Length: 234
Length: 350
Image (cartoon, rainbow over all chains, first blue to last red; front, side, top):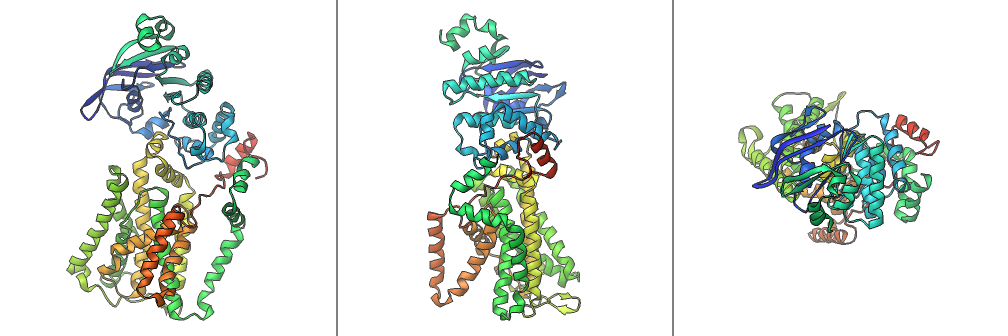
């Protein structure tokens, strides 16, 4: 579905991604783990066209989307729930969701999109008229994911959904991520919580200072001695 | 749903109740206010009062224009007087040198000002926050310098005098016969309606999302650069409209009519009234035009008091006097609403 090959990206002179190769097949949950500054968020930003790729290619459904403008990528069926939530703080939950549907071309689909998001996150339905900035961290995360779903994406990119959440909320969010996947949405999950990411995903890529160092089936990586030492604290 | 949308309005206190009161009756109150304003010239006011009303009208248009870019899109422009000037000069030159009919000069001037707005909008692709504001400030000064020094076209510092008042079916518009008042009233209604439709459209939602969080807006698939430029174009267009009206009304323009003070006055009005609301623009323009007039007895001290008022407001009501955010929920189109009701998200019969 999505194929990244030989991707290089820079922040000025800092080489952030060094020849990254990554592939996501339809229906999968793929996780991307690694420590701070490994290039996980940069990879997502490159996919969305927010950071320019200097070389390499990104193809989505056999179409080259390398360095396409963001709005084209979003209306092409990719949704992003950014790191740190980034909801629109002064707007209500409902207005936030409505902006998520901005790239939709079918006004008739709006109602379905709302009911789908409200079914997944009943908490949001209780808070439709509340300003997003006054929601709790977990609710904001739900809103960020819900907002990304409003455009009806086939591929959902999630950046650190566990960031800053209480442990029980983290479990709940990951439960919902699996649920969204079951509904037919392919997911690329960027996560620092390696344990959780490995248990949730089908396949995993490990990034270190811009390189993909290990990749494979998540359940195999869980048994890998190097991974256990470096990321699982065992 | 009913509970969720009404609850914050009830618990949030007096202002929200006042707003709810007015917003529920707006279909009666707005036409009533309009009829009242239609009758103003018949009430026997002298020319001085009618002139104040007319100037308020001009500044309402200018504030509404600034509000689109600064209030909704969050890009503070300190150079809006430049568009006002471009509108005024374009209309005047078309009228005097080009022999164009007055009623055509207004839209033409607005279009040219809008085009200049696009030029100012271009740096917004790269600049944010205070850097952008400084560029707009510079733009205002550059335009004023051009007007002052391009003698062959603008007549330089001497300005252009004897701009003829327009005719409307044989009647020459003047302040005394209320002609200019009616024209500005018409333009205010026009610009308010346009502004209302823009703000409540998909365009308006894009504007607000850029103000709230530009990067997140981009991730929603909103072309932020396009909409920022569009905000500047629309703002310039309406400011140019006001300028084209202003020149024949006063009959004389020079570069000193469009200094930075004018830009800062528009900003003060918008901030005093409440950026990001339309009612605030009407209120801010009215207060800041009327105040210097009624406080003439204070002589030069009135500007000290004017300053004190603005400082006090910044301290106690930074969001502007009428600047609370409406919490009346989003309105959907009829088809979407009926879909939402069918899905049980909206209560029936709303």
